[in-house]
Image 1 (cartoon, rainbow, N blue to C red):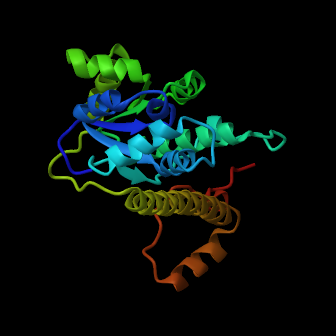
Image 2: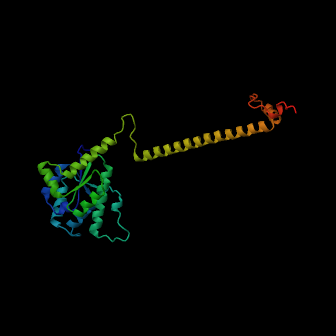
Image 3: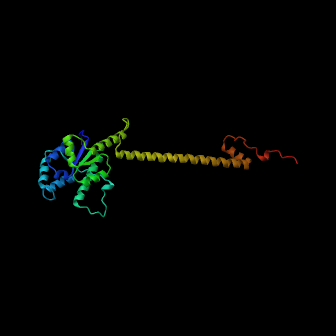
Length: 259
């Protein structure tokens, strides 16, 4: 998507087969439109009589779409709410709805600064997308889309999504003198930062160890000097270090008291 429109519209099967060309034209006037690939395949199957649905409407849509700029998308996203249980046996329709929900989330994740509007007349699908709490993903029924196109009044749910996107954009603004990193680059930066912290922690531990070692050696030398000053002085002279100040007056150097 390279247009300046703040919206991307995703069209679900029911918004096509349960409506007419007037609805499709109204939706097309709102902005960029995408069809999940599973929807394109389903419409073709309905038109060919391979799936249940309004064959005449499906064929009419295929003919109309050849003149419209509605592109297919196979983007997909993951979310705990979109993970069926291992024991869950999904029907064909449920699998279709799940695929559409994943596509909607994938588009929303790929275009975080655009409001992705899924137009669907499946209430359960719309409710499921709301539970994802994706700030730039907003499901609406086809009737709301027609009303929007006719009156130019943006639905409340879409307005709320736009506000959320604006707040997100403001909170994630990057200073012009800082590079914008991709997710992969962010991982590299985080790893480098972790390595720096590890080296820093090691250096701190090394300094602490050195201070402790110096303290213990000092105590030992001081004890040696007090216990055997002559031997200590001989040792100290061999080290070539400056003589230590006479902090203590050894007891054997004190004059003995007369009896």
